[in-house]
Image 1 (tube, rainbow, N blue to C red):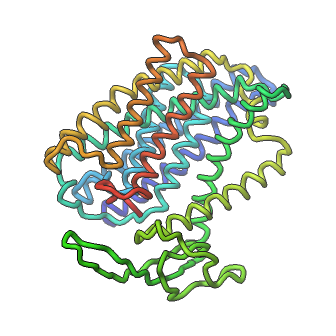
Image 2 (image 1 turned 90 degrees about the horizontal axis):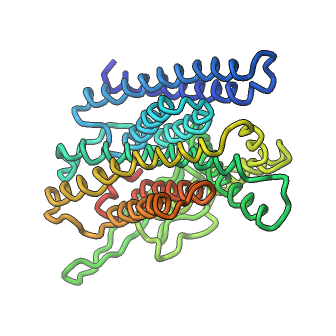
Image 3 (image 1 turned 60 degrees about the vertical axis):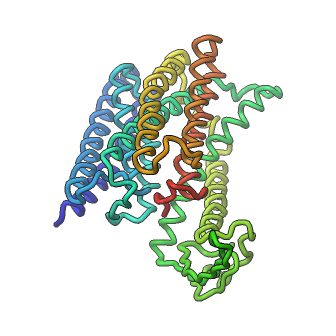
Length: 419
């Protein structure tokens, strides 16, 4: 067995332990209602078990990281599988640090599933070790990517605490217009999370079934001399093609529920090689996530926020507000170093300029500016509580788009991290 194969086994162990840790955190918080013993002792005992489990899972994750690094000869952060795996590990490191400071088991009930989702999301991408392209073959890869991801990991913990705050303070018994507006936005946030879970589930389901659809796509480009170039590319789908690639011909399509040909063609302005596949994946993600959300609503017969809200009883909103702020305050300088300063130094070394308005650079700057505004309002305007929590949630949505939207949708110098 090679070191890379061994790292894959360690990754599976870490994923399983994170899942068990999440269940133990749920028992620690939700189970105290049905415990015949003192609820505080129940929470402490199960919280300790959950933290030990998540810590062992983190050790397994670290084992994956270093054995894959040793086996491949390069730091495993150069493609989407490796980077998202590292981000999940960084989130667990950030969670462990924040947990040791505040000792709040309920934070684990939201932070560990976030890591589980990202680990599962990473597994959607190809796992093969890929050689570094010349611009990535630098020691700045280790410095820039790891520090940027660690800063984003603290933002993720701040997001988890901020979402917990909203679920704690939003009153689902009120029926006035203002309360309903808050409830709808919280529910929409939960719906987006369910859509991500739906995307992961449907990709694994169709891959497990061995589904494939193949197309040939003709692309017309104009070079610097004004000459028209025509190329034909092979495009493979792993999901049934609702949208086929623009200007393409069907080679073969596996049948699914009688669907043996695409329904629509991708719009002409989305004529990139993988644009049709990405649009098709987004549509399927929304369909799967909406179906999953609908099933959950039918099961519980109430909004998901109203289901989770009672679990927050006994948790001080001020504690959640403080945890969210502290996590972001820790992550901000780390992100500043990794995503801006180190990134500009590396950009100058790789491309001969510190700043080039590449989409990834622009969105990293937008992320930095947003959290700068968050800290400014928090410290100088006294924005705490509800407004601070919403900023923490919105901020991580921007982080997520910077990671996913730019890498997989917007073309640029950082598009090497695609599927």
